[in-house]
Image (tube, rainbow, N blue to C red):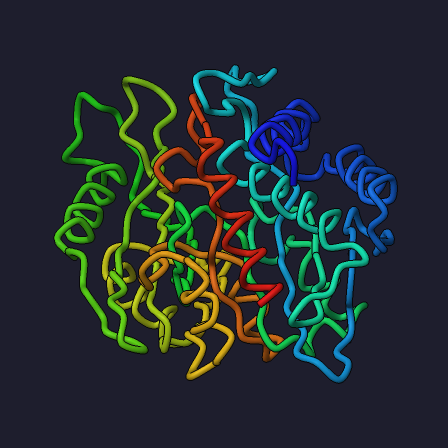
Amino acid sequence: MPDLPGRLARRTLELVDLPSVSRSEQRLAAHVLEVLRSGGADCRAAGDTCVLAGATERGARPLVLLAGHLDTVPEQGNLPGAIVDGRVVGLGAADMKGADAVMIELAIALAGRETAVDVGFVFFGREELPFAESALTPLLEREPGLAAADLVVVMEPTANALQLGCLGNLNATWTFSGRAGHSARPWLADNAIHRAAEGIHALAQVGPVEHRFGGLTYTEVVSATTISGGIAQNVVPDRAVAQVNYRFPPGRGAAEAEAQVRAWCEPYGAIEITGIAPSGPVPDANPLVARLQESGAGEVAAKQAWTPVAEFGLAGVDAVNFGPGDPVHAHRADEEVSVAALVECFSVLERFLCG
């Protein structure tokens, strides 16, 4: 493809400059649909700001889907974007508008071209929100043909490494109760913030734990992520609230994850589980995964984060993580993706899909 680096850089910047913070993806979805149509790709709107292109059902040949989300985290003074010194900088450049640009350019480049497998493209929204709000799971229910895919390449930031599985993600509210009183006579009260300090200190002693699964190492971690409490400087508080985030490895179910968090936290305060996203399975002996690696994907590693491979896993579909963004740059004010990484990702996937 002539001037591939320039095409990918300009397409990424074009997408960056169309703001699409979660729940505001409509304009970007319409733009992606128009660009695909103008480029000759077979595509359609699939409801709820989702866009599909290429094959969406399995035929006689294996079906491979490339999947990417359209939404971003909120702006941090990083719009509009720019192309600077071989990098596209701006909101969502790494996570994951660079990957969306690769998908769009591949869909256009492969339109009418012979490929080694049937290829489909899945764009969806609300990935950056809690799992229950994702647009992907309802899409899989509306489009059952997608669940027949032989492999899904979820183009999350991996710096062009092949990352398998993903961590589960549990969020909980931890409430500490005491008895209010005058701060001049604290012995007559029961300080909920002090109770919180005791519980959070105990939780902080739970260090990272490595787990082997599918031949890969995943690290289990738990953190207190926010805390609030108190109503005035001269009042001993009767209530304090913290948020807890727990990342658990493949092979551990939601019930077991919840039980673990309760065991850590309930001796100190009341726990309310506010959301659980399942861990993502590791594909077992899928020949397409091996072929993707042979096509130039980087060394196989564990995905130390949650990604939509878990949603595809719930639908019974093998999925892996592979994308041009570097996780180091995701969600930062100075978010960026290198043009060289975009070109490498495009080239690897082109070889993989075209044989």
